[in-house]
Image (cartoon, rainbow, N blue to C red):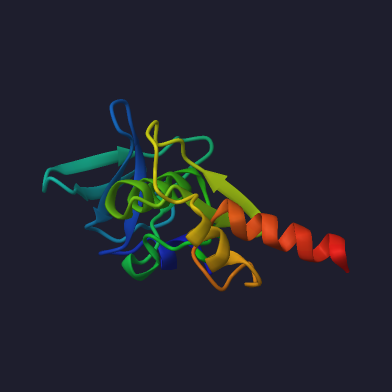
Length: 152
């Protein structure tokens, strides 16, 4: 699929921002080969002309569909790049208070800098005997999987 087909009106993208690192924007005019900028509408409704590097013509990262936001495994995202990963982790942590997220078999953990009631015996028993993807991401799921593999 060509860039002209992907970067069309209403497509959402991520653009670099000095304060927020990445911000979301929506394309308001179809991209055509040779364009020197993308016409965008930022989330705060401001219009912005995003300049494209004349040498690399690097287009901004595409944003994942809303249905994938907050996914518990990063490998399920349509687009797996820095802004998508950071946004997904932010949503899971700030909106759902989930500190753990999978990236395939890797467990990504965010330090909440506070005690959470997610390590008690009841949680240990809940994860005991479960397969790694059956429950929400957790260090106990990784430990259970490691134990199963070791016992084989």
